[in-house]
Length: 160
Image: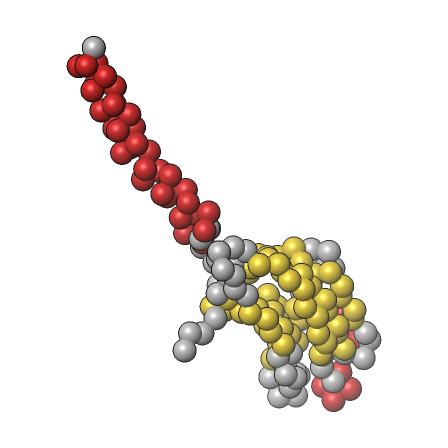
């Protein structure tokens, strides 16, 4: 009987040896799921107000990976952004809003051109890859050729 008892203990030890890396990998993914998913950002446009004089106001919610920054930028306006992080490197949910736009009179454009320049829809969810941006509107100035864009940008948080 002592011989079979030793064999049984040896088999249990082999199971532990084979299961330990699997359990370790699962724990690693639980604490830092970016290993599997990579960095990502989902942006849902909760509210989008577009006026006929060239103004836009947007409110959005986001789900992002930690260690990243999401910024809302309009030309000739200051950017607003939010950083994300967490002790367990889990995904972060948040909301943000802002407003901007263009001077249609100065550009000599009609309201219809402005409405056609809007590239997002209220209620829609968009996936933004790391280093990319979700363009809210893009409109060229006919006089100067300058491109006016409002966008939500997704970047890795700069380390010092």
